[in-house]
Image (cartoon, rainbow over all chains, first blue to last red):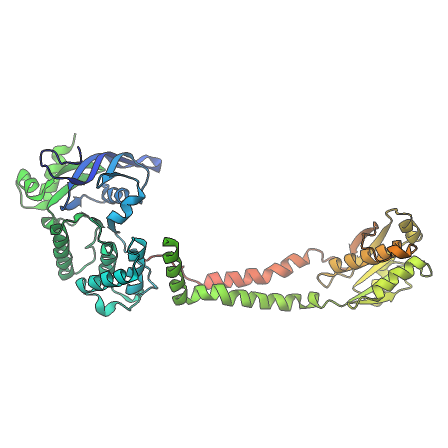
Length: 252
Length: 200
């Protein structure tokens, strides 16, 4: 698998080759995963708890630095600090400073992700606050915000430096249906604008929003492809059935 | 450059985090105040020192007594008791020095004569204060017969056998550290969690 997706002529934004991660005590979280994610795609990384979704994302954003195999982001072999500015990461649990206000959190994350000019930071933060409907809450400390509001702030923090690659670890967990739809609409807009988005989820009702899906099972990649192609190959409209069919096919 | 942004963020966090501010400013002030009251006696330590000697007429003893008598924080007593222990029992002095017969002669010969220091034992810091001043006084006594060396600051060479009238040696360590331990335990027991990490 190379920087050009096989036969498609599309450049891959993320490439994994034989990616294997074994934690202490021999727990194998990822087992020889090969994957090439096309630029501008909205990829759902699906699998049950412990299937290796979060480990994959943590390797991609540099939180896990030791692994076997190869991982490349925009052609840069990981781990590499240069990737930090190219990646926006929204962790499963919001990584915000609870005693700081929304503005202060966003200002900090923008600054450490390379938006050095104060005027530019202010402009981007203001734009993001408007986009995620956070203007009224901008001076409130994060500790006083609801879970949904924190998720929005966390997403804003991941997007401020306009990364071409977004890694979102279960971004819609705990959100009300209206907000979830808003998030997905926003993700689709970002992907249409050229961003590559990888979303870890085990919410099967949400996979229809993704352009591509990667099914993981106990650290192995069971299937990867365009959402519609995977559904058609399994011959079902029920996404749990589609997942199980592909997992069964890939089992030795 | 990131260090500046991280420092600014930490400063903002501190501003909002009263517990950490208390840890940085209020707790040290409280602990230093506790220490001040604990050590107040040590800082303005006024000691009564009894001296037991049979050589009071010698020039060396007079030089020794002159040094001790000139100290503002020493109340100098010449006691007729035969031993330091009896001198403490009789006078209630904080410490007593027992200089044996021939002590000053041995000192003048640059030998290392032994003498006894008995500490009463109910005040902290007495041993340090007494051994230092007594050694300085004995050094002066040793050089009493050499006028141009009188002001030389050297050790006396005499060896003190230190004993405690009331055996409270070791009291000082816990005496000094207990308030700090109590303050820290109270603080950390009252503190439910650190608030400087990201949530989640």
